[in-house]
Amino acid sequence: MALKEEIEKRRTFGIISHPDAGKTTLTEKLLLFGGAIQTAGAVKSNKIKMHARSDWMEIEKQRGISVATSVMGFNYNGKKINLLDTPGHQDFAEDTYRTLTAVDSVIMVIDCVKGVEIQTEKLMEVCRMRKTPVICFINKLDREGRDPYDLLDEIEEKLNIKVRPLSWPISMGKTFKGVYSLFNKSLHLFKPSKSKLEDDGIQIADINDPQIDREVGENDAAQLREDVELIEGVYPEFDVNEYLAGNVAPVFFGSAVNNFGVKELLDCFIELAPAPKSRETEERLVAPDENKFSGFVFKIHANMDPNHRNRIAFIRVCAGKFARGNNYYHVRADKKIRFSNVTAFMAQEKELVEEAWPGDIVGLYDTGNLKIGDTISEGEKGMYKGIPSFSPEIFKEVINKDAMKTKQLDKGLNQLMEEGVAQLFTYEMGARKVVGTVGALQFEVIQHRLKHEYGASCDFMSMNLYKACWITSKDKKKLNEFIDSKYRHIAKDKDGKWVFMAESRAWLTMVQDNFPDIEFHFTSEF
Image (cartoon, rainbow, N blue to C red):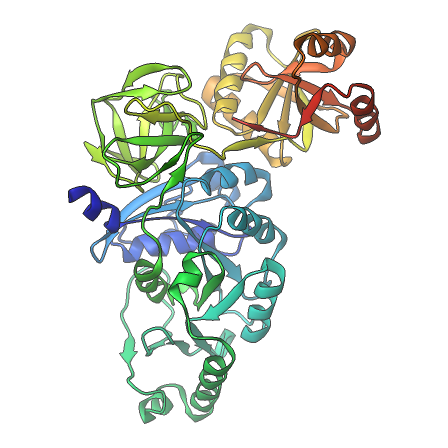
């Protein structure tokens, strides 16, 4: 029974959006409501001295952006909430795609001034591929933004998902008065508060209650009644099952920086969002309430604590109970591993945990045994599916600036690549090292971290490459012949798989035609 109760209590979700829509700010405010922190920090602001809790890396504080997914857990209204704040910047998209494999649902933040942006569309595609339930939070209502109806239409059209408003704003910008909750029929009046909590909700049994006129003025009250009538008329009744199937996105309005609309979102979320679900391995479907533990690694972070040079693997518990100090089976390496040092997270602050249940994210201190995509179980051999690595878009050669520090550079590159920051390809000829990334900003992050965490300095030289293709063939002899004939363009990835480095699209097409027995892959399923 304990297992079923613990599963019912868990809600594991990610927060996604385009950069600057207010993801990290919303994360902070959710933590504030969960009682996890007393004062919320800001991402970029000269007036607020505290940085956001979930942006703890040095480079994040300097830039005011999130570059790594951070994991936070807190309790709220009898539920245990596991929250993953992802980077919105497209340069770090791969970290976000992988994080989406570890969550059961998603809150998507949309800026009411800019509407739906490109990165939001890409992330939504990943959610749709996995049929992940999505809740929308339309943010920044304290600014003059676009008409709420236009925003709803744009979400339906661009993100290809039906929407259903569960709260509605009363005006916006300078005249913003508050939000009416269609979910539990209450009115919340707006008082700006940047970092502390204030409670000012008014329960209203009937939308025609004259108290609304007194609170927001007759004109706004009349407009609100008209809007509510229109919404109830145009949109079908909200159906929880449609939301859980990923077909309908409930929409909330608010202003995260002012703490506004966040509590309604959280209250609704714990009622609607799914508890941990079954997951597929190569062999079968694993239900969360099975007795035997299993889980997978979706993220690795080196040097979270610079004094100890440690490396932490983030594991999503999928089934059974995880207990500290037990021996568990590492499927890829086919051996037993014992984890005695296990942590739960509050961004960078960690606490030791004795046990974890399905839906929880735990950090395992690791000396280099684990990789992204690894499965850990109580003896079962199937690996969890669906954590691919994509062919990068930008390639640069690594130039070592200090020959005395070659060892540190190699170690640093290998550890950062295992974290999934970028991909490393080593040419067979001349052992040249090439780093491939999704966005240009990652090179700065790699340089910064190599210097500060490993004491190694390097430069990056641009290369004219189109794609890295993983190559396989049913005929081993043909594969070896191909490798010999294209030796100058053959490299290995960090796992030792063969990769063909194509310089242009036309040339790749020609090579594919000339070697029909060779298969070229643009993603490597780990």
